[in-house]
Image (spheres, rainbow, N blue to C red):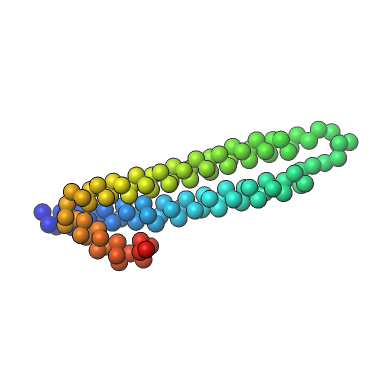
Length: 118
């Protein structure tokens, strides 16, 4: 039984690593993408304007629509990652509360994991 509990502790640590290190890193990448999209949008008006004698500017509104769709997907995905991270951490803690040996193994591995310190 102790070996099973220790193995559960190892699995809990792996899940905790995903919840506290991997998902936040990926979420940060999405946050960077959102910021980069905003920087592009900030300079877009000047780049996409053209003189009236060339007719209506159909590119600018189409780009804005596409931009808003992409940023919406990025924000939703980031939010989903953050929510999943929090839920996964909660699940790990709930499982750890049920088994003292697996909780000890989880804690031991968390202390050794440089991504989870602090």
